[in-house]
Length: 307
Ligand SMILES: Nc1ncnc2c1ncn2[C@@H]1O[C@H](COP(=O)(O)OP(=O)(O)OP(=O)(O)O)[C@@H](O)[C@H]1O
Image 1 (cartoon, rainbow, N blue to C red):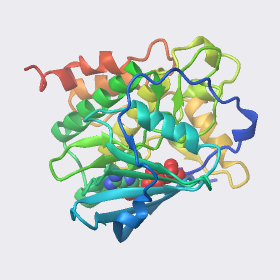
Image 2: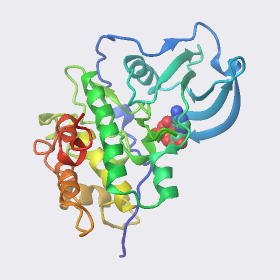
Image 3: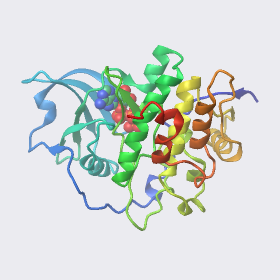
């Protein structure tokens, strides 16, 4: 059996039907407008396909009249879509990829017109730029944490924070991708941790524990995923050492996340502040883990944001 470092991407536990959908809270403000019966695809020229996810396809498009460039996500009608749209309607933050318009077809297809993030995902940015220094990581962290704090203020869990769900534009603004087919709106009476959507690799230990997880602050899961993301972007690989098991890969991943000690920065070139910051994110027990608001006050992030 070889020990390997392996990124587990896009693996989803197929428990959709076994999980109760959360009750929706009243929508307090509307960020995206509804396109009044106008098919957004017909108003735009497709320039290229930016990517394909579980929920649909994202295209780079240009408005035929204004020539403005956007990202247009086309979602097949499925169980995830309506909640994704509910969440999109709740959010408006400079730290979340902005959604301009939504159009729903009677067939169930939804079209979401978003701001175009020209640099791409943090994952591709890191791969093309090689090692990112602590200063850059601190700047990225600060922006993502502000996004998480905002989401919390709207009672939204992301549940899939990872490098490929963070987008960057040429101004080096980092925004959380509106991949909210996985996210949850927190209402009462629902166990939000008892949900295995999302990428295994970014899941916090308590999300694997269906017995105890209702005892914890559900938002702690996003802080953990943020910590794993930050460490991965810095060291350049997924930070858990996994025993490769051909028959039960997800069990190996679960045992690494739940059974072992959380990863930490051991290299002498990292500052003690950064090591401590990672340590605060990757606390195995959610009650010990810092919240996004607390992490924003950590010296690793706060000292460059003191104005
Ligand atoms: N606003 C945007 N600007 C630029 N590129 C985008 C934008 N939104 C998405 N993309 C690109 O499209 C890809 C697919 O995005 P999408 O949200 O559909 O799927 P995903 O998050 O990769 O997968 P899944 O939905 O299965 O989690 C992204 O990885 C990114 O490269």
